Length: 307
Image (tube, rainbow, N blue to C red):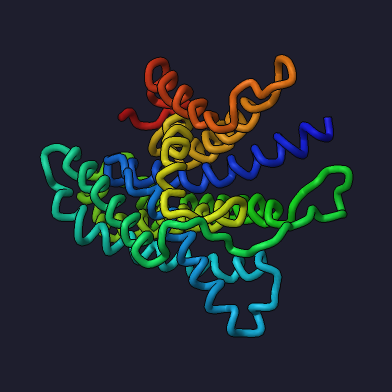
């Protein structure tokens, strides 16, 4: 039982937290702007590499002697802000001119182009090789023995919970959050009611891009950095958003945790001594779930919008 917790349950919670942060942005962008943003995964990579730049800059300061996980905590706000600015510029340059198009498929195609550009820029400046935030082996903390929890996993799960709580407060207690919910329900009615829809769009990009940037830093903490890291996660992130219900941030959280759990649990040797599904193919679990949801319950668990 302890081995199951250490090798499957804890990684499932960590992976689910990363998926949830990414899926929130997908869900919010679809709710407000009504299109599937296929460059969202590459914004995750942008956030991860901004975090890497911050770590490199901190090496020349006394903070550079801190453990890498604590340095990355300092990098999180900068990754959030830098990726949010990048997303706003992308919206102004590539998406806003097509926002009034008869079909949003034009914007969807534009998002594919943006994804390729972002990935190419990362490869241009950082190369194509795998990069780690820090070399060496990190050992589990000793407070929870025999449960083996790495320090970075505590930061990832705790950070994700705090961000989700902050998002809940923002959506339910602030004027901007209420305006976002109103525009999600009916954009034209929100505009007639005097809501500044362009401001709502800007905040949607700030929150969506900022959260996926932090997800990228968390993913880099848990694995490694490679220019395609966001693209590789995009299918699972979309599956989480669709499962929870597009346009429903709380559904995205639930969907992320469910997809992360099912992906990790699918590699457990349920029947015999070999993994039920090879770890190399566990993304197929997310794909299968997404197809089943689109066929049998396209509105998702929380009754979101339908593609």
